[in-house]
Length: 216
Length: 130
Image (cartoon, rainbow over the protein chains, first blue to last red):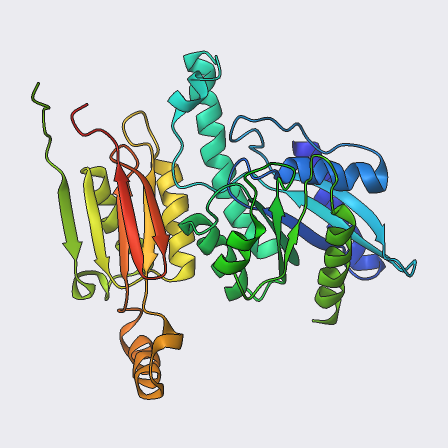
């Protein structure tokens, strides 16, 4: 972890003396929305390596993960580069007993719960550092929750450009319309991070988002 | 067979009680009630940065007994208001803070889920007899 931070800050301060700083693109959302699956998809597609491990158990990602200098291209061949920041899911409650249901021992579950609470705090603290954010929502569940409203509201308050991803569109119960009607003022891109469905549309949206950031 | 009933306490907090407090004190007060297993009905809304502060403070306090909160807000739809009402609403916010709407905060051990839309809330509680 320390080396990640060292490397990350080294990069940032190094860039001050080179040219423009690297754009930080954050992946935010509630737990189990598919942020790490998406981070892995983006990272695999553009630099050929994964970022972190994903699972069905909530709070699998409990630390900020950063993949530096991801370069993506648009259809015209124009290239843009950013640091991808995968964040722990933001939640208002964490019950270690939920982890016991996955066969975890009590001490392990309590430790995971403690790490998860720290992860939520870190994710919120990092909101200030983001240049643009992709909010990753599970399209199979009701998106109109206070956590989602709070995340998006805070990004708006910081004037951070946002695109919303309706993830898990490979599942039958998925419904992009629910997300579009809950957050009508935002661009919503329906994808499956797992299967890669519509991922090109997301890359187009990310490209636009980062270009917007550059113009600010 | 008769089911055992347990008390469900609801604490109403008028804007006048917390409006003049600092964000930190306001959040501390709200969490104090919630940790007493009360469902808090706060007149008005927290600021966006206060909502994140509330989540962060909740995370710091999570323990075996306190498992977090459920949080929801209902607020008047500004697009449904007349122009005069919109102006009054905006001036009121500047002078008094966000006094309109209602914020519900419950302990996660009692409130399992709050379903919401801008105008209504549905509170789903856990089995209180347990």
